Structure formats: C-alpha cells, structure tokens
Length: 233
Image (tube, rainbow, N blue to C red; front, side, top):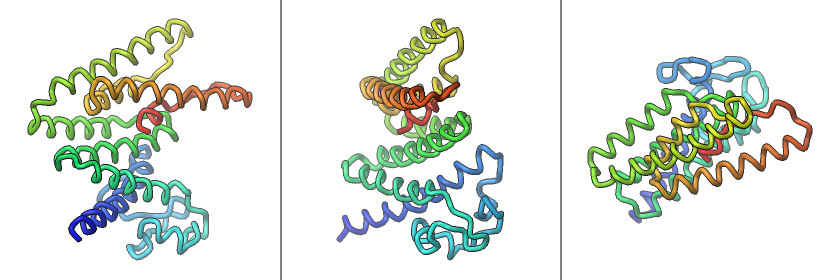
C-alpha cells in the first residue's frame, strides 16, 4: 500500500510539473510572467479556468482544441505532461537516496524545459542553467563526497565538447556550437560524472548527425541543430 501511495504521488506530481514545464517553455522565451499570471490560450489569449487546466485529461475531453476559440492545441502539451511522470516514475524505482532523487527530478524538469525551448528558438535560457547549478550546489552541500566525480564530469564534458567546438570551428570557419551548449554540458557533466557525460555527448552527437543527414538529403539549406535539445534528451 505504501509503495502504491508513493507511486501515485510521484505520478500526480509529474503531471502537475509537466503542465508547469509547458508554461515555462512558452513564457520564458517571450519574457512573460511565470508565477503571478493565469494560464491562457496562446491563440485567443483567453484565460483558462482551473477546471479546464487538468493535465492530459483536459486535452482529451476538448479533443485537442481550445474551448473558447476552437483552435488546435499543440500535441506538445499532453506529451510533456505524460513524459514527465514517466521519467519521475523511472527514477523512484531505482532506489536512489531521497536527496539524489530530488536532484533527479529538479534537473530532469529543467532539461525537458531546455529541450523544448532550444528546439523552437535555438537558445538556452541562462535562468534555467542557473537553476540547475543552484540545485547541484545544494546537493553538494550535503554530499561533499561526490565533489571529485562532479568536477571530473564537468571537466570531461567541457573538455571533450570544447575541443570538438574549436576543431570544427577552425575547419568550417564558423562557430559550430553555441556557448549555451558548452555551459549546459558543463552542468550536465557535473551531474552525470566523467563516464556518463561522454556517453551522453556521444549519443547526442549521433542523434544530431542522423537528423542533420535526413534534412541535408531533403535538400534543406542552412541547417541549424538545437544541440541543447539532444543533450537534454
């Protein structure tokens, strides 16, 4: 019974945070207020009452449309609202210490937000990376024994991606990565450690290369890949 209550709590928390992540991903790039402002339809700007703002369920009941203007609601909203509790559920069943699990929830929530924003705007908000850094520093205060792995993870991640950045920039005579990507890999490296950050960069690069190849062979020009999105995933 206790496990059931814990899992239900985690799932409900994930649904709520998934909905909030959608708010962050929409409002931060536009410079809109985040906390002291009610949810509204991005098409008609009409405020959404609480009873019409239930994660996933509202989208299904309204058949993916705004109840006021009848315009389509992006499928991103229910996907993020479902994806977030799935990630949280995966984490709680790994039997991590509670502080490590809280850090997991904190960072993954930020990474989901970053992945959406970078995909749409090719930018990584500094605010989100500051929040990620604060979470890691609070965790470090209570777990000083991980400072060595955290330092190595940041150094390995930044060193590997930094060298790649310099070499490719010289070859192509243009900036091939954003400075936000370098700062993000520094923070992710501190969280994952030296081995896992290299695995992360490898699979991020591989997936990015696959997407780039598909776009290239479809005769797309001036292809710009949101590497922060691939790192976050």
